[in-house]
Image (spheres, rainbow, N blue to C red):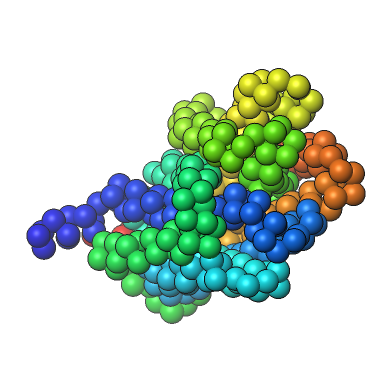
Length: 409
């Protein structure tokens, strides 16, 4: 038994899939509210703007936590930050089911965002801890495909659970998954890396903040994130209110984009590694261009099957930018700054998660239609294209004094 555990601890692929499962639970806990809010709205008598505030309250704290989470990861290591993140977000998932008012939901979701905020940077640092440099971009893209599978899992799990036990008990049950996940990380996630001197372990944060190319990637992913989180947050409501679906039918159709895009992410990482080395910015720009076209076709067609086809294609091509946003920094940044660099980039994506549901909620309330909100997403596709094309260099920005030590395993 002991040999089995030690072997698992030293298996980089096992660790990759452990973090992958962690992200699945992360996104399950995060996204079930997009289904539950349909019933929460009735229980608390909320309008579309208030629903947008609830959906966005998570993302503001999640975005704020990205840079501190990255810094904490570089300072204290991926293991501690991953475990504490899982514990905190699981607690506040359970608390979501105990909410008693509009304000309490906002506060709980805000604290929930703080709990989840450090996981992405810590997981990327985990990749740097276990994988050699040339394998990290592909491992990173594989890991981040879990985000879409988690989005797909949420409506598939939430819809039947809400029907069977109500939205409150649903949050309590899915929150308890954190106990199993915490135990798995305590037992198996134990990276063994060479200790660094104090001076080597300090994070050159000022250099990161002044890195123009890093901020261009951040803007690219912020604009793409507007599209991602706008669709993910409002899709269940759109399908039920604008397309007339019942909750079980909605759960099926809302899950499809996550499944297709998760698979597309795995293929996308292979395409990027095989055919687009040093052409990553064009790969991302092309993906956002096609994504915007299919988004327009999605909300203008009267055919539900065609709308669902266009929606899935929109999300598939948007994943090109997602792949680049999390793969390119592994080429450009030294290992000791990966946590902080990913924190900055993911801050952009999660700031988008705050802005997008909120802005779309106000647009829907003001116009009484989803169409204007989708035009807002198309404009953001254009911004993402411009930011991607403006990235000047894809070459590794590692100086001789930043060369990382060889991991001891």
